[in-house]
Length: 267
Ligand SMILES: Cc1cc2nc3c(=O)[nH]c(=O)nc-3n(C[C@H](O)[C@H](O)[C@H](O)COP(=O)(O)OP(=O)(O)OC[C@H]3O[C@@H](n4cnc5c(N)ncnc54)[C@H](O)[C@@H]3O)c2cc1C
Image (cartoon, rainbow, N blue to C red; front, side, top):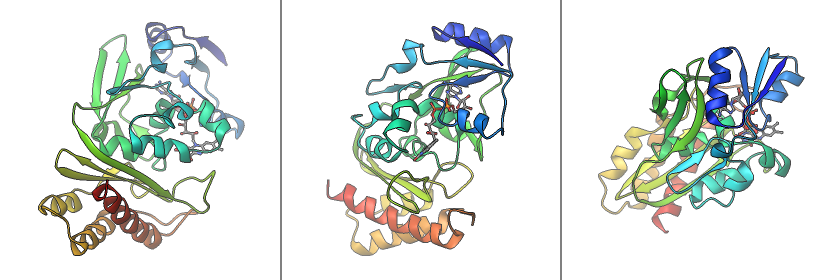
């Protein structure tokens, strides 16, 4: 296995252009698990830990190399809530948002937040420079993205919109160190509500019918909140697997969405 330690984005994408089969290594909390289990043995690895640009974040842009322990203190409330649920302190010290996006697991805890805020994924290559891919075009299936073989993820980019309220919660088989059975983010953006979910479809998803119903209400009543939860439960596309059943995931998605909406309404 050959290893390139990139010192900046230019060096990282040049290395990737030369070795399209190479894997990027950020915190290694997904990649090294696969290597250790012998699931995956990349011929070349491009290390990103020394790329200073990827560590930067501000209100509109979160570098791919920002770790979960830093995101625990992020100004974006739902992202900070999500960060606090990722793995253990050791995992949060190493794991990054870019790695979460790169793995593109339906259970990635950063992904519902990205979908709720309509964020884009900034990618870079020698051939095409930088471009921002809308989240819905980036995540294309279970652990599948539209990232080209010569590209890397440089940042999560937030649209210039006023987020009035945002709440995250997840359900799992225990309270800590747990992969999501369902995760959910509800956000109030301007005067409209958005709801995004993880672990209930091959990719992160929005429940657009539930959003539309809610956004027709000027001041949602308890009946409208219940209907919102019902519509979310109807819209998700979960499966039964070793972590949960399709029926439980559907139920939990509706309950979580309703609770998070109530929290947004009272904030
Ligand atoms: C014990 C344990 C508990 C965990 N708990 C959770 C949890 O609760 N919630 C959760 O969401 N995840 C969890 N994870 C998974 C993992 O920690 C996260 O997905 C983390 O965000 C991965 O980031 P990383 O920097 O370690 O990625 P890496 O392992 O370095 O990379 C992951 C993938 O992304 C690619 N990649 C990384 N950076 C880039 C880049 N800049 N451009 C292109 N591709 C890139 C890599 O090539 C690789 O394919 C857990 C993992 C472990 C081992």
